[in-house]
Amino acid sequence: MLRIALPNKGRLADEARDLFRDAGLEIRARSDRALTASLGDEFQALFVRAQDIPEFVADGAADVGVTGLDLIRESDRPVRVVADLEFGFCRLAVAAREDSGVRSVADLPTGTRVATTFPRIAGQFFAERGCAVSVVPISGAAEIAPHIGIADVIVDLVSTGSTLRVNGLKEVETVMESSARLIVAERPDALDAAQRQSADELAGALLSVLRARGQRYLMANVPREQMPQVREIVPGLNGPTVIDILNGGSMVAVHAVVPASGVFRTVSRLKALGAEGILITRIERLMA
Image (tube, rainbow, N blue to C red; front, side, top):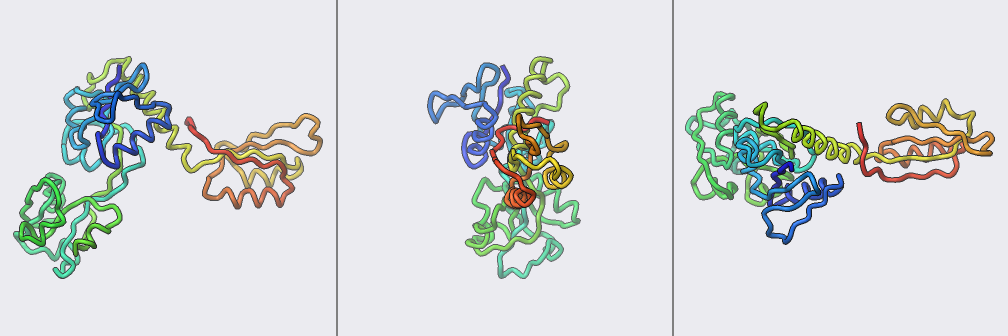
């Protein structure tokens, strides 16, 4: 059984559960406080802090994990990213007080104190920029640090920037961008052959859901004589599927995967060519 370390709370936890459910891996736990849960016959979920997941995976306590790229880099543990899961988007940024006059990290004087819960990443970032700062590790609530004299600036996670603004801070520079990743241990012997196959199947199932998002399945009956124009409108993944309709005469059935963002315009263009019986459906999973 493949052990999968998942975040136990927060936005990463909620979105991870949604993705696994959409991939057909419903989390079945005895209670909301359960530390483990079944994900079917082949997978077991372990619920731990997101920041501890790289450690769990690297040390073999879990075979696979889901956590943020920021936490992976901060941990500096030997793990390998298998897939970008395309949720939990945020960025790690340098922020200063709005009245500080700091416009970029180049404005920071020698000895500037930087409060952060990401001391490793922050230290590397400023070292690469040639900034001689003093990194002050903290456990949380970085936004308050510049107001109570703990530090001059902070390095913290930013999503919309509203929390910074509420606390009288402004974003100065982006350190890195992050999203949720699927990881395994870097060691070649971390997984046996059966576990590697299960991990590959898990990654494939999750990625199939991600590919399907933002896509729609379109079906329409169109005049046969309009097929050259139809191919331009609905190219699909590898060209549209064209099917003869029983007793359809001059009409053929066209099936294709199309971007959801432009489906309204696609339907309008098909109707202008004389298309009938147009049907648009969501796609649950899309295999490569």
